[in-house]
Amino acid sequence: MEKKINVPIKDDCIADLKIGDVISLTGNILTARDQAHKRILEKGAPRDIDGAAIFHAGPIITEERDNYKMVAVGPTTSMRMNPYQSDVIAMGPKIIIGKGGMDDTVREALIENQAVYAVATGGCAALYVDAVKNIESVDWLDLGMPEAIWNLKVKDFGPLIVAMDSKGNSLYD
Image (cartoon, rainbow, N blue to C red; front, side):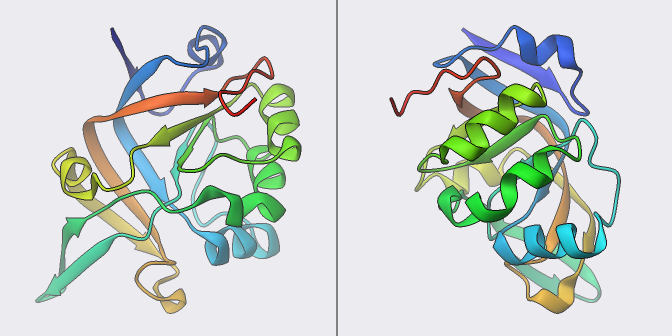
């Protein structure tokens, strides 16, 4: 059974999640890859990320008359964010989404900050884009389209599988 979660996310919702749970998200999610994570640590997040869902993704987006349209959005390899992720998690996001797993420093940050890491299935970028209802804004477009932070309004974004929970359990063990 799929658990539906509203974003921004509350701590009590995270405490109930365990590895293997299938979830979907409704609300706003932010895309962020390694350069965005690095800049968040250098300059602070461009928007409030407390209770946020951060998606390791490099979306494909077209621009027509100052209007952005999402073509595809799939997960990118999360391990590239390992050097930054623990410190970003300490800033308040509750769900990190990506593929391929993350290291033990991230596992510890998930425990300390009551957060989870969920995996999105690679190759399903067209499926995930159907859940994106609107591109609400973009930050740091100077990093390039895939590295910018895209603020996406989503409905039933998933399925996502909890791969690392807030109690230190990991599907990768």
